[in-house]
Each structure stands twice: as structure tokens, then as C-alpha cells.
Amino acid sequence: MSGHILNKPQSPEQLSEILLVLDKEKMKIMAVKGIDENGKLETVEPTKKNQNQFMRVDKNGDLFSNFFSNFFSQLKNPTDFSFFKIPAPLAVDTAKEMQKQVDYPTPEGEQLMKQNEVKPEPEKNHKQENTNNMVTTQTTPEANEYRFKPEQIDWETMNNLGLSREKLEKMNLLETLLKT
Image 1 (tube, rainbow, N blue to C red):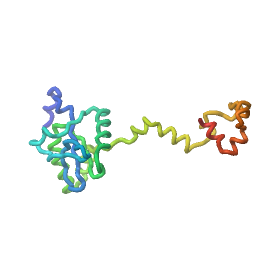
Image 2 (image 1 turned 60 degrees about the vertical axis):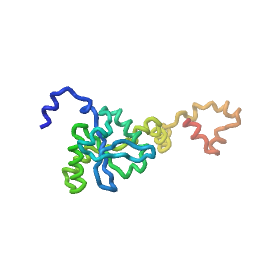
Image 3 (image 1 turned 30 degrees about the horizontal axis):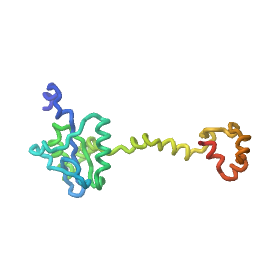
Image 4 (image 1 turned 120 degrees about the vertical axis):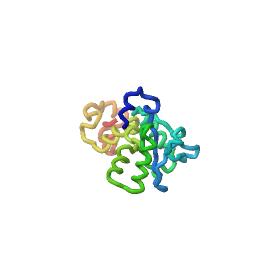
């Protein structure tokens, strides 16, 4: 049935996707319109009549991930909702199928939900902050994790500064010095 769509040049509609949301409190599938200034999710019924109000998002992977992370962080009570990313031309029909799944769950419906669900990706933020590196050096203080070896330290200069190796060991600062 959808075979003939592939022959047409891609319209902007086919390059964008719609965010659908399952409101876990009301157990209803809705189309996302946006977020109001109080961080409340704005939604509309996912019908053809409301299509022009649906919030469209770029299909491009990275742009979508960044957009969704920002969107998610602005949202109050994000745990009350599950989000789904659906190609724009299929949004209305898919919303109907998903609502059926919410009302009368089936394994096939569950699969459909899982395939389209989007979650924010916390890993991306960690990469920028480099917390992974910090964690590894703290959790594995083996000798090879040290940046300096004791023999690389200019102990004569350190002694002149009043910091002997023994003093640093007593103060438990030697390891810290070697790691920095």
C-alpha cells in the first residue's frame, strides 16, 4: 500500500517526524504540540484534523537527540510520559494502533511501542563532562594509573619546600601528588 510513496521525491513531511506521547495517568496516546512556559506538556488528539498542530522534529539523528534531550529537560514530571517518534505521514495511523495497544495489550503492539519509543540519552552529557575518566582513576588506583612515578619526583626541590616523601606519606598526600 505504501509502495507508491517511495517513488515521489521526499516532501518535507516525509523528512520530519512527529512526537507522540503516552500520558501514563490518562492512558491516552496524544500528539505533542509543545511545552508551555510552566514546563507542562501541550498535546492534541492525534487526528488528521489536528495534524497542522503536531510538533514536527527533524529526522536527522543527532539533531533529534539534542532536541529531545533539551525538550525532556524542560519538561516537568517527564516520568509521567512515554514518548514515541513517528514519521509524519504515519503519525495518525500509528497513534491509533498504539492506543489499541494501551487499551488491549498484545505482544505485537508491545513491539510497535518499543520500536518507536524515544528516551533521553544520558551518556552524551557524560562524554562532554569527562566524568568517565575521573571515575576510572578513582576506582582503580593501581600503580599504572599514576601520572608520575615516585622516582620522577625531584625530592631535593620538594625537601627545600619542606615536603619530604615521608611527610607526604604521613599526610596521605603522596598518592594524590603522583596522580595529578
